[in-house]
Image 1 (spheres, rainbow, N blue to C red):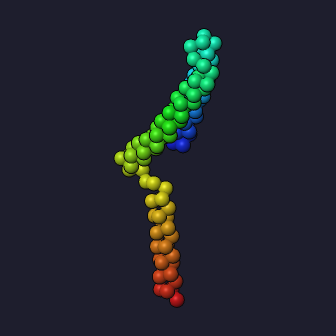
Image 2 (cartoon, rainbow, N blue to C red):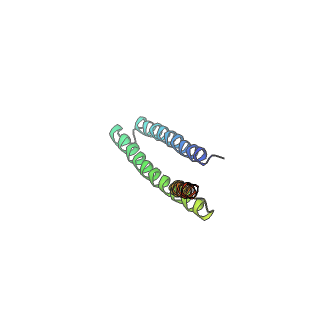
Length: 107
C-alpha cells in the first residue's frame, strides 16, 4: 500500500468536507438573512470567521497527522528517506574504496 495515496485521500476528504461545511454555512446564513434574524454583512462575517477557524484547525490537523505518521513509522523501524540516501552514499564510497584496493592488489 502506498502511504502517500491514503494520506492524500485523507487530505482530499478534508478539503471536500470543508467545502461542504462552507456551502452549508452559506445556506444557513442566507436563511437567517431571509428570516430577518441577521443582516447580510453579519452573515458574511459569520461565515468568514467560521471558515477561517476551520482552515486554521485544518492546518493544525495536517501538522499533527504528519507528526503522528512520522512517529508511527519511526516506532515501526521504517527509515526516513534521508537516512536511506545517506546509507546509499556510504555504500557507494565503500564500493569505490574496495575497487581501488582491488586494483592496487592486482597491479
